[in-house]
Image 1: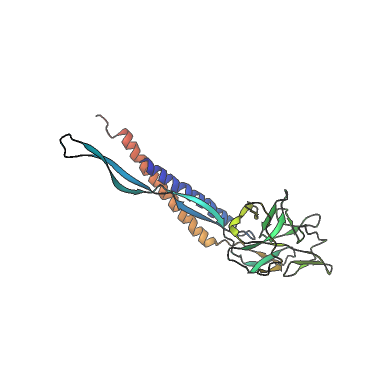
Image 2: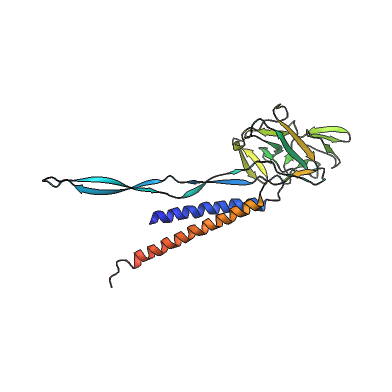
Length: 274
């Protein structure tokens, strides 16, 4: 009886976490560069139930032996094993703002790899982003919406005098007919080593910097000024999955209520002396 409680409770917890994941995706459907999260549900290991019973042997001394008989397997519920971002390329949206610079992946050595803008966190930890909705701060530095500096190929912040600058397809920044910097692009050969750090930023699991994609002959990309990469959230699919998660949560809730009523009868009615 109690195993049923635990199984239904595990199902409710996993669906609650799935709901949180999906609602966060839907809330960021219009966030530039946002990568939708995907959850993986996994079942706990099944257990084999056996019945212990004794059997009398046909002897003069009435010897009994213990036997085990298999009843069957029982499931112990599910849990949210992990959440991983979906790094597929989002659509580009034209904004005509000079500080908006979208990154388009064209050729990658492996399907597991990805490209990112390199930014500088307040504690100098290497961080990365696909949110190209940049801006200039009061000192003229090119920054993300959270204030992190966008870095050049020399690992230095990019400082400009005004928004009257141009960026070519390879990230060369030109102002007053002079090249002032080149935007650095980092390459992650395995996106499983990247984790979300919040506010559209990413970090490596070991906090080690990613190599630059600039000198890698197997990588080709293009930067487009005046564009931003839209979120890759499929709002319709996420809404459908959200309704499914709600229904699964309610189903497990009803199962727990049924177990609760059965336990109430077992404790208060069965065996009552009248």
